[in-house]
Amino acid sequence: MIKTDDLSKSFLRGDKKVNAADNINIEIGDGIIAAFIGHSGSGKSSLVNMLGGLIKPDTGSVLIDGTDIYSLSENELCRFRNKNIGIIPQNRCDLGKLTVKENILLPVSFYMDGTVSDTDIFKRADDLMQKAGIYHLRDCKTEILSGGEQRRVSVVRAMIQSPHLLLADEPTNDLDEENSDIVIELLKTAAGDGATVILVTHEKDILPAADEIYRIEYGKCVNEKDALKAS
Ligand SMILES: Nc1ncnc2c1ncn2[C@@H]1O[C@H](COP(=O)(O)OP(=O)(O)OP(=O)(O)O)[C@@H](O)[C@H]1O
Ligand SMILES: [Mg+2]
Image 1 (spheres, rainbow, N blue to C red):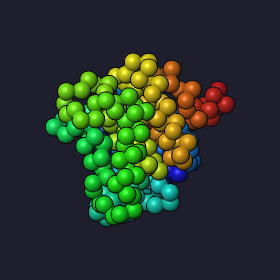
Image 2 (tube, protein in one colour; image 1 turned 120 degrees about the horizontal axis):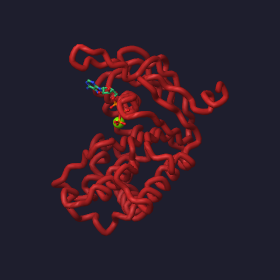
Image 3 (cartoon, protein in one colour; image 1 turned 120 degrees about the vertical axis):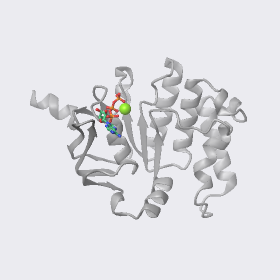
Image 4 (tube, protein in one colour; image 1 turned 90 degrees about the vertical axis):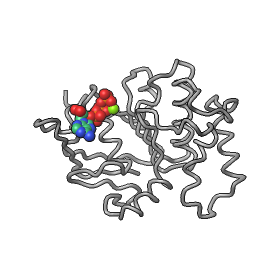
């Protein structure tokens, strides 16, 4: 479950103040896919980064399963993020010289505490790679992969540790319809396993996969259903 209280963040662009998040209050439960839509520059990625513990808000708080993540120390936050949050970033972030499988297993190699056996995690990696249609590429360096293949590596890596919160920033952006469907099925699987899934998208075709839809405009967040009721 994720909850924000009056989350705000502004940036200075030159001498202009940009409100990337303006008093955002949301509460999204376990097993829910919540889509976030809005124009380019409206603040979607900024919100994702704040929810994921990557950008500290100016004011307000982010609670994940009751933990106020910005009250944690830097070390505690890194560990919390590694165990509980999966992020599919808008831009490429894999390490090109590593193979697909090495990239996917990278998050597991931090903070190894013996709670998951190697056999379990290798099986999960194989299973997810198969579902994502990249199993045959597992020993290839990711730098030789197509944009869509790299995107699916990011999806599997974000899901490898069964995170409670999965943040997907335009995960189907550079995919054809078939692969877009594969990614949406993976997000549904994560939600089915109890994760809260935040899905940023410009693509109307995938909105039916969402249980809730929020619109971001100039950093303000409105639940689309509430907006429809008010109009
Ligand atoms: N580090 C930064 N410094 C200055 N301005 C920033 C910074 N990060 C984001 N912004 C500004 O904040 C606003 C929101 O950016 P953000 O990346 O969140 O938009 P977005 O909704 O994800 O857009 P897109 O759909 O194009 O990905 C933009 O006007 C952007 O220029
Ligand atoms: Mg963005």
